[in-house]
Image (cartoon, rainbow, N blue to C red; front, top):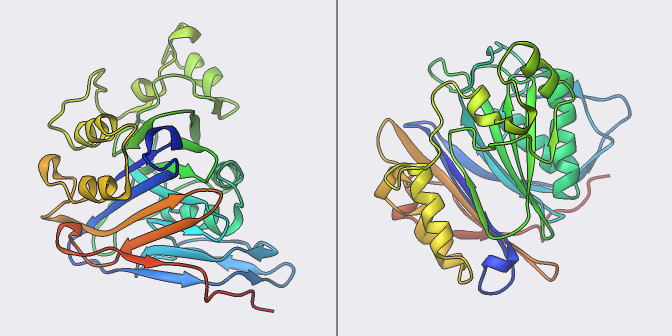
Length: 311
């Protein structure tokens, strides 16, 4: 359903890092853009996420979130330190749990607690290891899935993909990268769950460590070595690639409004919200759409100027 992409500074016209995502949700589900100030929290306080309660952190960062109204978490967003995160639904061979942290909860937790992309990545990983992911992901019908994430800041970007308790993370070093609703890391990644290789070998999912393929091993369906240019994932990947070196905010807008490949989605699932961010050491800017269909709406800039620490 969703698509998330990043263009690193070497791929953009102005040398900034550009992040974009469409949030595709069931038609009729409302999604708002909300701003939440930085806060200090009492010691030993608890935090009620969508389905479970976990310990609250000592402080949380100011965030702008694109959030389905019924859940605690968010589909995507940004924080005051210039970190942005978007998540994708993925379907894997691992069992689905009826309760736990939603992928959207993990997006918000990463943004509220992570001052860098790497720190947010570690926070999500640690929470995933401790509490697991699970619970119904739709408001009015049953839908359960695992999650992948694209996490970026002014300096770097990461893709984190999960299958049940297992996870693998890939650092994006240059150019462009996108994720959709399929696992896409075709190796062991740069970081991984401590038991990933051992467990996969023990149950016969692979025999040669040099040929370890996370996406192939854990995807519910088949994995194509070459993406079809007519698929949504393939179309986004192509549009990002052909714009390397000249990628701008307008490029990001055109991709997220594209109907070929159903990137701007209309139907039983719709593109209910959209985000574009430009990140640099000098300035971080964020634009959001909080109504359905990016093709019909204008992006509105949001900032943190009105958000202050609550004592």
